[in-house]
Image (cartoon, each protein chain N blue to C red):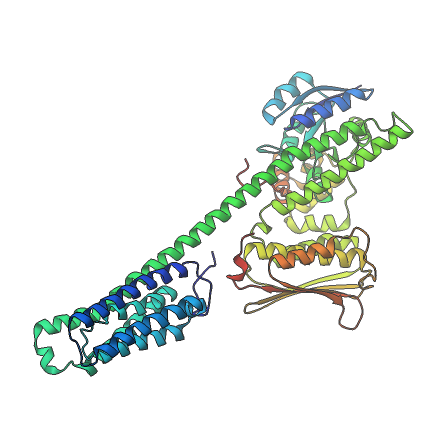
Length: 391
Length: 193
């Protein structure tokens, strides 16, 4: 499984909406606590302004995160949010602030949106920020000599860390659970495909062979219109057998762990005796997600087959390359080039395009470099997140 | 009259083959075995001239079964009947002592023809091309190549043993190993069996 949380960037996290709901609830709760404390106890000389500020902050921050979901995963937005809550704590002139609960809610999105270690780093930084505010607001050496106050500040400093740890752990576990479920779903689909392939091959196809054999025994014993009917039926049965072979090939585990380059080389070796062209396969595309590799191979194989069968080429070159996240497969020949009019019944190009679309790859089919022959160029998206949509 | 034993794991093909062979004058299908387990009693009871053997039997490789049939006293001719009768099967089939190779997709008259020819002691195998021979040679060790060459020339086992200064059993063991190396992998879905 290649699904990993690798970047801070705006990646699609399915749990985000749930964490957003948690933020919504706790922040409203935190704001209510703050307003209640400000109303019941006199905290500062400017309690009225603080009440307006906390209500405005709560409304604006929640509206922004809800209306622009992109912000839920933006470190810049988290940073602004954290600065705002720390500013509120500073404005309350006491680190045992009525805004303490509200302040903790600013940890929810970064703790769940970042990979585990980075989330912890964020939590520690946030705690240091809070310590800075505490020192600025009130904390002095006299306060630290009082053991009860020392204990209180220690607790206040630990809570952000504990909250971050718990949330980051939960997010991590949920992520793994999701990966695991995806994997087992994929395995279930895989084994179902295996079963269908097996039934097609081992049962249905044997019956087609049997029917073909029995019917073909009539051949030569009848003549005229009946013979024509029989030979028509035989043709259909042969086509059915060929269709089944294709379906079985598609259903079998794509490539079964063999690499694209190796299979293309094998395909080239199979085609070589049937062609006068010199076929060269060079390079490698490296590791690819299994079903991307499967479709990439079939596109490459189809292009190669076309070049051999219809291209009338002297040289055919298959170039594979991998540069970081970019993988390309290129099939070039120096033959006749693409026909001006599509050959009747040729599904090849259409199926190549459909396959490229399935795996989100860019496929271009056109003239060769010097205006001769055909060049098929396939650029693959190897980002595991993009390659991981359901097959 | 050619007496024929059929070995195929699929009932539709057993029934189809039996019907088709019964319809052809001069051919008698004696029995149809569904598995290798059923094959031996049927073989000993009926003593056929030709065995039409499915290449892809459950839990058994058709080539290994063929080797065993050929070890019998007065062994029948073996016609390998395969859904994958492609050229790469020819050399391993030849080494296993197969007399003929017919695709399951072939029409009945091709099958009749092949059965008649193998029953006369002829070989009905696709021609072995240069590439095929090179590919096979690349998979085998240098010691095996003389055995491959002599098998292609239909040299009897005893003569082969004499030429190479080996025991016939050694040669047989080496041929078994060569078949294993050259065996055409058939796509069996994982966990299907």
